[in-house]
Image 1 (cartoon, rainbow, N blue to C red):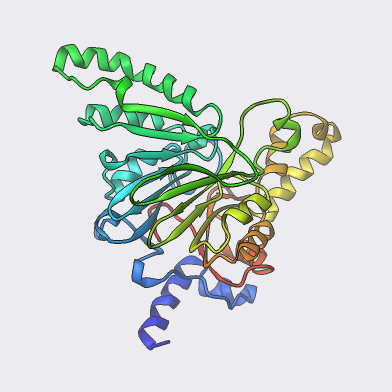
Image 2 (tube, helix red, strand yellow):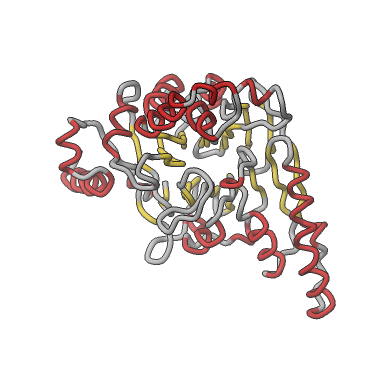
Length: 351
């Protein structure tokens, strides 16, 4: 390792964990991205647009966990850009703004995949589709996701039609909104199923464990993890999930594993609420949902290690302190199982 490389990696370590935090926690593992692709650095003004780079780039558009508005992090969304063509995974609040901030042309998006249909993964879909139409879009977009996706897209098209009726008369527009946006329900199973395939990527999905068995028995809705395989890179997005054997299988040997994470303190806080009212575990509740259906650092480390992924990116950060939390406890838990490279995700980070 040459001096220049050491210096670059030290800077990334400082910005991600802080040297004091590293020393205090005893963390000596590498937490950096491969500089050749510019990861760990923000996309946007002053940086080359990911869409202008060859190969497969990943831009974290939103890394916040859960519904809500945050001035520091947008809700969950990830852009996977293959030879200049962007694909979108999830579309939470703030996605549209961060597509612009990341120099990603939303008009070039042809496919969107949803890991599940909680609103922190879908809130910006009406804005995205409506603004694409008024921006002159004429090429259709296919939107894929678990049960309910097709119905959700139909509803968004209906929402867009009112504005469309006005602008068609008043501005002479000719593109029909209902011809542009098509939703597709994807089967969620324990074995990988094909979502779509084109000349750049093949996309597969499996059911993860974001919805527990007692909920699955009462509804048709499901949650999935997705994998993108291009000629240059394989990228897996976990979606919201607890530890999942299906996801380990899907992520096997992946170049990049983008996984949600909930710090142990947050899990403990929700479990304490459950202890205060034992009946909570006998009925549906927010406390039960959070405690049961997200991954602790150790869960994430186990999945990454068992799948033998090359790079782990921590995303959808659910922490006790809100959207900012010391990285050391997250990394320490992951390191109990996974010794590979780790990045703590930030909005507009390019990987």
